[in-house]
Length: 269
Image 1 (tube, rainbow, N blue to C red):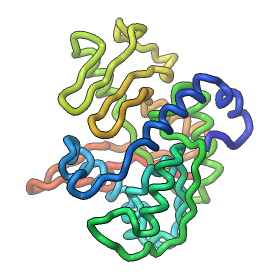
Image 2: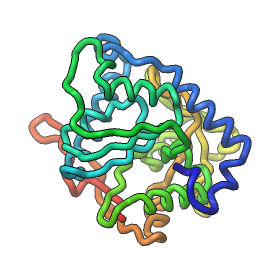
Image 3: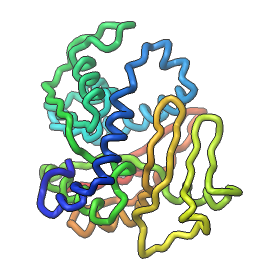
């Protein structure tokens, strides 16, 4: 997605950007689809289910019958069923990894889940392999953040909504400062910062460009960048994209997790 528009080509020609993009694409293309048994045996199965639940809630809250959807970094099409349940009218999925797009096509055609056959999806779809942005994997410069939001703004219809999720930058920094060194984590994930951040201090004047290595067992092993949400929000408002900042906390009610509309921050057109 970043490939289009004026003013964004300069950083896309940077050799380090190309190398990083290829590394990410190769990583996800190399991952194979898992069977139901393999997915259930994953060491991060509960995290995967939590992430899927969050996306399901967001889609059900904001997607309306007949909506057209552009799914950036759509991966292998794991959210296709969620969009189908929302009764959308048209779907475009784009991902940087050729292998992921091919797996998404297979899943859309009903051939991916060997443990069960499902009916065809009710919406027409178009799948593209190309440059797009995933916030934590691309926003290492403020110019990239502005370009990402410009691209989103240009594609949203009046009244449209951009749905996105990202890690809480404040939590990452808090855990870093509580750690003895420059790394923290547990048996299924770890985050490591380079020596340049040895003082664990970050200038508010340079909120982007804070890179860390992120490893999640059975899923991710790539560099990412911290995205301070209040800065991202202010950049959206620069473009006249209204935002609502609400508490993004989930709550328990009788032992079950709940998200309400007031728990969600969204950016409109």
